[in-house]
Length: 465
Ligand code: HEC
Image (cartoon, rainbow, N blue to C red; front, side, top):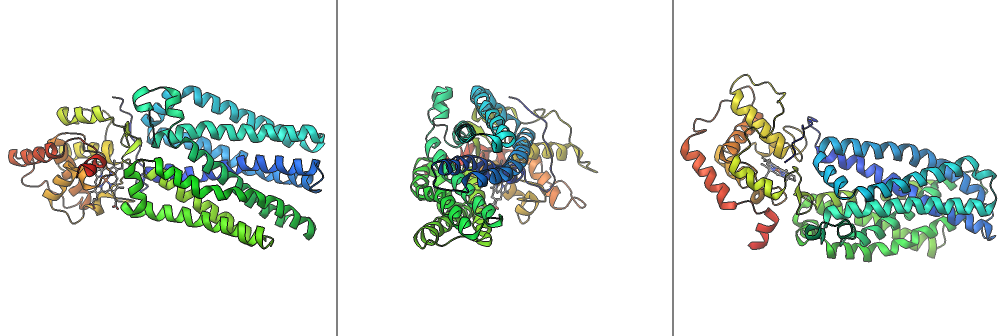
């Protein structure tokens, strides 16, 4: 079992750090992908005499695309690696180990995307039409293929499918959610690029008639949104049953985010079909900004759900969020956590240092990926009103307390140390160790609770009842 030093971000929840950055990155990356297709489409319309301003607009749009997606997109992309390596090194380790050739291919496409994009930026305005179109098609396809490859790895985390038995690259890559997520992401990319284009067109110097024409063409890329609903249904029909139940009301946060994503997407689609295509109205800068914000919210909702429904795993049925595998977790029940985490604790305890240091390590090792002490999803307030016995029971039977938590990995002494640490967090100044702490009958009771629930994941327990 690999033990990495844990980072401590105080009141910020680690999952939210990755998620927050991830949402920005995904949104920008999808803009870059859709943008490639939009420019190739406009250049094509220009060459076939269907859009006079197609060529000049493509150049203008590309400058914005470069500025936003190359610079901020690349920075947040590196930022994603940086944060996820800090927060969940083991998950990233497995992802790299299992799919290193996929990553290599993905990065090759990314390089091609950057190279062709840069060439277009530098020489595009001077090139002949044929070459321009070719360059734009190379750019668009390279960007899309980097999505194709990364999508295989991200969807594998939620639905590893046959990979759990076969452990081959392609069995993990072409997993049950591969195609529905690829289609949903492609459709979203096109829609995002169309909305950005509408904004850019509105702010540009073209005559009103030209603007209208450009907008009519750009909004064609909103039409694939019609696929979102059927592919969404496809996606939800192949994800695990418990994940589906959380989205359908089992976890209120996930249901809300799901609804947010769905409503925002439907509003954009409805606007595109009714107002833009049927009524043939145009789109002003304000509305384009509003729709773009809705698209951002839809992306945020969808990404939150995708990350959320994977709990308690980062790689479903393979690696728990706290970086433990099932066999390691079961072994820790026997051996206990004492001496497992070799890194020092930075907190200074005035009294009861031994048990509190132990408890702080248990917290850091098993809970800190999803909880903070006093901040977001903070354990001090979640356990505020609990008696000692309630804490002991709920920690020992963690997966029964909430099915999206992993089973507790450790023995009765570890539960007891964590219990005292949680009590300490509520009131550090006046803390005293419970009078009955460490007594044989207390430890026996905790042991009984641990054995009663076993190490079966909560989502499995729920099915048995
Ligand atoms: C995979 C992420 C994850 C891990 C790991 C995790 N939890 Fe949780 N826990 C949650 C979520 C999500 C909630 C729900 C929070 C809410 O309802 O507001 C929760 C809720 C709780 C609650 C409140 C339960 C209730 O019924 O009100 C307690 C107490 C708790 N966790 C303790 C722990 C402890 C102790 C650990 C470590 C041994 C831990 N959790 C590990 C995700 C996790």
